[in-house]
Amino acid sequence: MILEKEVSNNTLLFLAIIAIGISIFSIYSSLQDQTFTGAAVGHANVTISESTTITLSPSSINFTDTALGIAKDSGNNADVFDCAADNVCGINITNDGSVYINVSLETTQDLFTSPGQDANSFRCRVNGHSNTTSTFYESVDWPTTYFSPTDCRDSIGAINNFIAGLNFTDGFDNAYVDINISVPNDEESGSKVSIISFTATKST
Image (tube, rainbow, N blue to C red; front, side, top):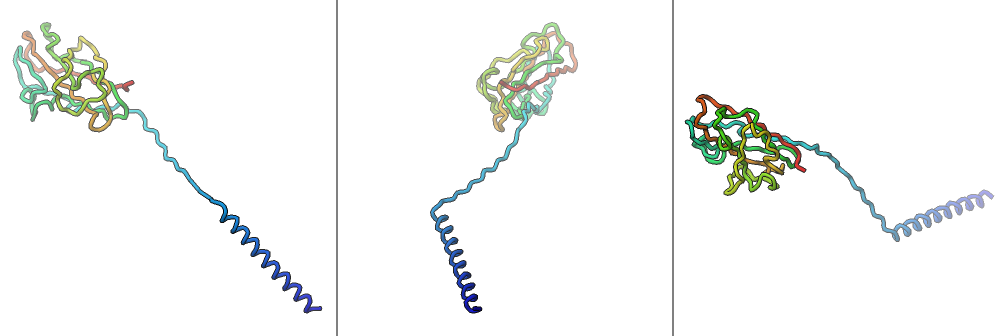
């Protein structure tokens, strides 16, 4: 009786092993008939805030000494102290922000006090073909054509969008402003100082 029980137990164990083997084989065969693909997508997000920062270089123009009735131009190196070459000693405006900008100009302190001054006494001009339609202004190179000089006296007030659509991309983010003066014939002698404010706003 003991022998029969052992045989019976051995038989059951053998059958169980076969059953497990068949199950594993069935699962393997089923997996072989299916194609599994996996994909994972990652994201990196950042929001860059809008900035309308500008820098001026140089921020001041020191004309050489002059006399009544004489004209001076920051584009001529002989007319500016410590200026090494033509067309580089005006005011270079750089868009250091992250959006296209318009730059308005306002003279908050006039250069001359003479009643004989006129629109030619204190003028500002910027490189580019237009001060309202150009989409970018390129470096400080003086172009062969540019729009007519603008009267920059404080009696005129702000000149809105003196520079329009100035790019923020390096290499296209500069505008060169040239200052031209013509001393009135009745101007009092002495040191003369003008203050020009440039204000940047987002171009729409």
